[in-house]
Image (tube, rainbow over all chains, first blue to last red; front, side, top):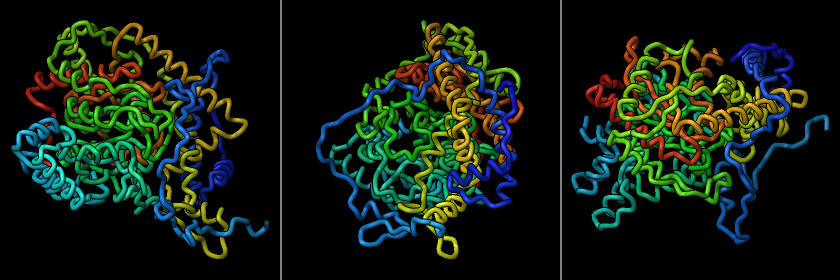
Length: 104
Length: 506
């Protein structure tokens, strides 16, 4: 990949991104991952400025249109099947920890 | 070692049809081979994460019963197969090589799995892979690496190293793989086997645990081009359960493979991609590649060099688009509905549980990609990274379109090097990513590709792969040219490459 401007990413930014992605990284992991991420980002930063404003973006390789089907009932998973992999279930429902944080 | 396991799937299908063997006999022969060489996380090939001996033998017995009653469901009815652990299978665990899905048994079958079951192929087990298909060496599996049957100190490629190693080591005649940036073709190259990434949408993704929806594709992993064609025809075709599935016929792929094997490529225009060679490409890989191009010329093909100038940006575009899609896809692993749940001490909230679970359940490479994806999609960076990558994707598709105005297929080495030692690139993500240099453009543009063995590299005696790329929905060209390459290379080298596989030890 051609060289261009550097992308900087600090340890704090990595911690913030991990928080946004709901991953609880400890200090050792941050020490390990942050420099690697900086190297990766520096490398992919080469892409900035490659394509001009006149180039349309591609989100999908093969052109697609919306797909409809007949509005008829089809079999789905039973409640038992849907809950078969749940870490905890109660009364045919997923059992989850409290949703709100302490401060809320 | 039973002679049965050295036969191709097509030969096994013929033997079954002729009544010369039974599905139980050949399923047992493959299970014996797995028991002899597959070992575990610490030794042996370790291509399988889960072997289903009882289930496979029961399916084989049912197949034999059907066949003796004259009710075979498909020519491959009774020929066993291995399935990459990223495809959902009822009754069998589906872990995606991740701790976060340890022991998960899905409540539904992937469409491709449903199709092989409906055709009567006994499923031997689930194959090892980089966690959530993120990697080029299978070392990112949470359950220990797969080892290359050619040299067990080396990587089998990735992410589908398990499927490729299983067919290379004669543990299975057929396997299913998935390819997001090269995960079928690159393992095929480094293990001396055949791997096909079909046209995007050509094979259903329903039940494929997604890494990057716009790039992922299921495909065949085999030892011969004809076997890939047989499997491709079986699993391909429209599926209403996948809204990106292309509603078009699969085409006569088996016919194309048989035509190609006859060896005449008169009138076929072949383009050698300028950008996929040069500095950083192993000399032994380039030597085998050039020889194979010579063989194509001898077979009557018209060979020219074609430049695809934007391919140099493919890797950067891919390592923005794929993590962006992956970070969104993997958000579903939230410890609430299925998979691992880690509950920290005290009275944790759902969010605390989610964070602790995702930290414990995901490995380093998955964390790296989720964080890169989150970064690329965050406001302030979106246009500069994700938006640019999407535009580069357009430029790469335009390069392909321009090239296919001039030629029928494009060719390159499948990977820049042969199999490297285990551990060598584990903590150097960029070096690892470079393995996919030649395979990524096809995923970005949605076009099909195949890797066919081209021989062994001079300097290390390890397999080299020859990649053929065709326009979207022209998968038949892969099989015609691929079978011609296979026939020419086999004849030039005095036999199939895997005849030279050293004894595989457990």
